[in-house]
Every structure is written in structure tokens, then in C-alpha cells.
Image 1 (tube, helix red, strand yellow):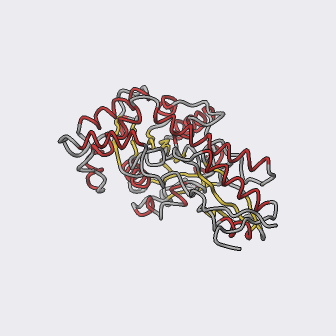
Image 2 (tube, helix red, strand yellow):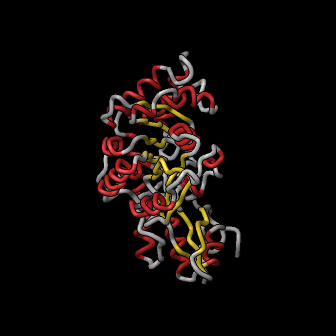
Image 3 (cartoon, helix red, strand yellow):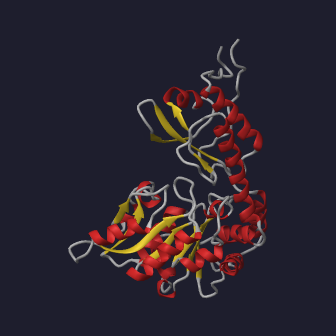
Length: 360
């Protein structure tokens, strides 16, 4: 007798498919009932910046609320660099792989070096510095990292400290992409705080889009020399929202208590439940991720069958018969959804493909 029919499952494609956490929606409802100063100068945006700076322990820093991650990376990196200067990143880095050449489109080359478990290493940075040594080449100036990485791994404090020490020695800037910084800071094994990241980087951003907000990222510019005229550049790049309170009210709600970290911790917990279940069933994984992204390795036929029940990213080839997929949990992912996905994948892995709810 065949397997019981399985209904369509929740999506595990990304962590921004849902709208926003109810408390953020309520904050927007309340903010929308009043008139506000525009362009990020409203009381909600100002309060959000104060809350973020208090967490960072850097009162001299600037906070700029922007709409999305690619926009934030493009704006910050192009603002921080002179025309002949370049960015160093791991070859898996988001700016090198998933931003459609946005940084290069501003005229700044992205120099890449092999990653180690998704992370950039001091040795990789040194190798690129040794290769780019004269005015006939671009001048490396900014080191880009993301936490979490594209593979869901996290930087430990010692790793960021080593990168910052090298940057100080070589006259480089250290910039951290924090699209999933909430998941990084609440992952098992993390020993960094938001204040640590603020102390170790020249600038970074806090991602809201992938952690319960409708939209929004908070760019934190710690280094004073990078702060002048940023609002001019934000406006020139089309990144200054007239209704800035839309982002401000959400970040105010995220940081007035522990909500930002609670949402990230939930996403991690659901992904770890999924990852543990896959390990127990013998499903191989590309990497042991401590955060909200999971990377199983499945046969092509299994991937095709799974696509009939849920959505996910087809991440990369693995060998002739298998490929890696990415499964992502969010603040809204429920335990029942995780368990249903586990049942489906483990059934496929046991070569007992589930029947479609409409099939025979």
C-alpha cells in the first residue's frame, strides 16, 4: 500500500515571504493615525535610532533607516569608497553572488577570495592585498563580511577581531552586512553582541526585512569620518523615504524590548529542529548551520518530488546525481510545518515518495 497523501506544505524558500509580525503591524496602524515629519526625521525614526544606539553602545554613531539590503549595501559601499577603490569579499558573499552586480554598477570592483565555511579569512584578505599593489590596479579599501553568512554560519568574536586587526594594519574599512544579524546573534555558539559588532566594524546594518518587518534595514555608521553628507547621498540614490515613519515605527517596535531577538531565536529554533531531524534520518547536509538556513543534499529525483509539495531554493550542484537545496525558517514558521516537511523529506530519502494529494 502506498504512502498516505500529503497536502501542500508551507514554503521554506526564504524568511521574508510573510508580511510582518502583528506587533509591527499594530505599530504601523498607530503611527498611521497621526501626521509625521518626513524623510526619516519623524519621532518614531528618531526613537528607533536612539534604541539601536543604546544597544550598540556607540553614541557617536549615525543610524540611517533604509528600505532593503541591496540598497543599503550599494549606498554604504559607494559612499565609503573613492572611485579607484575596491571591495574585498568571500566568493560566496552576497554582494558577489546575489546583487546583480550592484556594487560594480557604481564603479567599484569586488575582489573575491575563497570562503571557509562561508566566511572570509585574514589569509584571504592578505592574498588579495598582495595581488593588488600598484596604481595600475584597483586599490583594496573595504572588507565586506555578512553575519550570518550565505551558508548560515556565524562569525565568532575572535574571527571578527582578527579581521579588524588586519584592517587597522592595512588601512582598510570593515563593513558587515547584517541582513540576518538577528539570527547570528541568537545562534548556538555565538559569542558576539550587537555592541561587539559595533565596536569591531566601521559600519554595519541591522536587517529587519528578514526578521519580522514589512521592510527596512538600519545602517549604523560607527566611524565618524564616514558620516558626513550621508543624507545627501541617500537622497541622491533614491533611498530616502518620504514616509520614513514606515520603517521607523517598525524598528522602534523591534527594539523597544527583546522582540527583535525573540523573532530571530524562533527562526533559528525551527531550523535547528529541521536540521536535527534530517541528521537523524541520515539526510546529508552541505554544512552544519547553527542559524535559520538548512542545506540538505538530495538526489535530483527527490528534489523534483519535493517541489510538488513545497517551495525552496535550488542552491548548487553537488555531484552527478545530487544537488543542494536551501530551506529557510522564519519568525512565522510553526513547529507543525517543520514536522510536516521532515516527514516528507525523510519519506523521499527512504525511497518511498509521498503521493500527491490529487494523485493516485
